[in-house]
Length: 190
Ligand code: 5GP
Image: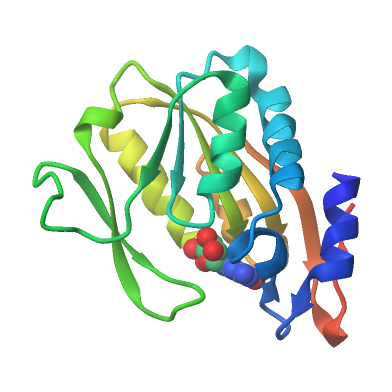
């Protein structure tokens, strides 16, 4: 997605060889026009696939997943990161090591919002090692729902996450692929 590449070049901050800060676009501030455009792009790629729900993880996946859900006219479910006192004790839970925070968190989705007859499109912001994605995929599988595909805004190809998800037989669609962050520069794979 050319527009997104340009914005990453202009506004992305290379923190080190592994991490790209996208606070101005995705992870802290949200650009509504760009977000709606990204949502439309995911929706176009999956429009004919009978998606019944979109699933993401709070918090950075929510905006773009909402935009795609709006386009496809399906509900958006976001996995919650922490059990609250109000959480459903019967919910599906998985443990995720956080790439950026260096801690382990639990994510959960209530059984009410993911059903056996669902066809799920999973959308997330950035994939690195794939721990967050694997946890969500496990929940979708445990619910007996069908995972139609995984749409991710930024795939960092030099880390193993996206390929490890493809190896599970899941279709992965990324809006941009980054092949390197070396020397403080963003290199795109395509
Ligand atoms: P993973 O579980 O694939 O290792 O990491 C995925 C999560 O960590 C993403 O949801 C994203 O929020 C965060 N993350 C991973 N790599 C980066 C990065 O380079 N920049 C930012 N801003 N977040 C990242």
